[in-house]
Every structure is written in structure tokens, then in C-alpha cells.
Image 1 (cartoon, rainbow, N blue to C red):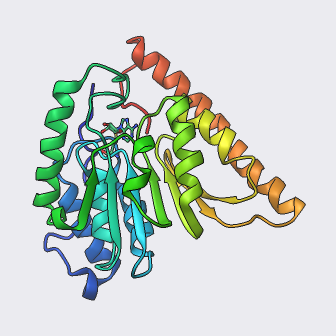
Image 2 (image 1 turned 120 degrees about the vertical axis):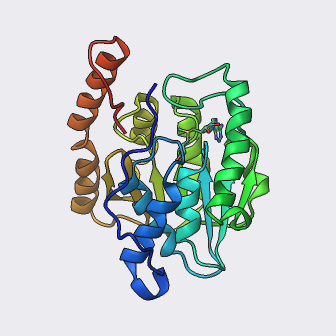
Length: 261
Ligand SMILES: C[S@@+](CC[C@H](N)C(=O)[O-])C[C@H]1O[C@@H](n2cnc3c(N)ncnc32)[C@H](O)[C@@H]1O
């Protein structure tokens, strides 16, 4: 399975300081930090995570579910301010490791754990991230208080994905953001979001970058706004259908990648 990181976008040869160069410097620093870090998160999606993290106020909290080898973790940690807690939850146990890797990947997951720690250290964010090595359902007691940015990219089967959105989503603070990977791409994740997020008037659709979709925890007031909120999400189903067809053809060997993300 191909899982090489996508080619880095063009960046200035000399990295800037985000404090003085603004977004161009931060984007260059992010692209350099992710260079060579394996995963399924394209750089444009990493940039979206980075900017969501950068908007978290001092004293706030970011929680990631599903870290793999650290691409998304690094993006979140580099975006977060010094006074923001960054928690990464991943059991690195060998289940639900990636596309078509549901069970029996214990040896690979042990390597993932080592590489995850090394990748964070290489990006100079090892000390910024608290890794909770549990499945998300067993990790609630390890995180206290509300969550300002929740990124969900753990087990993609319907049951655990639904539970992540329901139970961890309930911990997102008013005005906080929920970002979910493989939306309208993975069948399990898409059914889960259609069950938990789309019908809710407490989650306002913000849009998506590829399969990375975002919602804000805020009341969607008024019947017209609620209908518009649901309609905007249902409008993604055509793209979802195309992704399912592409995956079936790739899995059957009738089409070459890349796997849709
Ligand atoms: C698709 S990968 C995550 C990719 C990662 N976000 C990145 O940017 O490269 C899925 C990860 O979820 C983890 N995982 C599987 N079941 C989990 C669970 N119940 N709770 C949290 N993480 C889980 C796997 O160990 C795997 O590392």
C-alpha cells in the first residue's frame, strides 16, 4: 500500500520564523517538519490542523485521537501556543492501523510507537505532546476538562468512530472545533458523522479540505439555518460516492492509487 507523504508544496529555501514572517514562515516550518514523516495526511490538511491549533487560547487543550507516526500530531503541536496542552491518544496496538489494516499489525504498531516518538523529537515537539497510549474509549480519565480542538483519526469502523464523535465530541467546549479525517471517504466514519453530527443543531459545518472536515461546537439557530447546515453536509455525498467507487476499483486491482483522503 502506498503511504508515502504527498510531495511537499513549494517552500522558500530558508525557513522563516513564524513570529516574524507570519503564515509563510509557519507553513515552511510545517512542511519541513513533516518531510519524511509517514502517514495519510496531505500537507494541505496538516496546514488546516496547524491553523486550528494556532487559534486555541492560552490555557486551552487540543486532543488528537489516532496519531500513527505523528504527522497530524506534529502539525497540531507546531501550531499550538506554548500554554496549550496537546494530548495524543493512540494505543499503537496493531488494530485499525490504516486503510485495510484492521487487525493483526502488532509488530508494525510497536515500530509505529518508536517512530512516532522519534518523529516528534526530530520536529522538536516531543516535550510539547502528552501521549496517552490507550484506545480512545479508555482514555477519558487521562484528560481532564474541556477540549478546544478535537482531531479524530482513530479507528475508522462505524462503532468506534461513532463513539469517538459522540463521547469525545461531547467534551468539545462551546466555540471549539472538531476536525475529523476520512470524512466522506471512509464508509465507517461517514456513517458515524451522518448519525452523530449532521442531524445535530449543536454542530455547525465549517467545510472540508479533502476528507478533513470541520465543525464548530455552536448552536445553529433558526429552522432555515438548520436546514442549510444539514444540506451543506448532505451535499458532500456525491464526492463520497466517487471515493467509494475509487476505493473499490483500487482494492480490486482495476485502478491505481492514490487512495482517496
Ligand atoms: C489512520 S492512522 C492515524 C494517522 C495520523 N493521524 C497521521 O496523521 O498520520 C490511525 C491510528 O489510529 C490508531 N487507533 C486505532 N484504534 C484506536 C483507538 N481505539 N483509539 C485511538 N487510536 C486508535 C491506530 O493505532 C493508528 O495509529
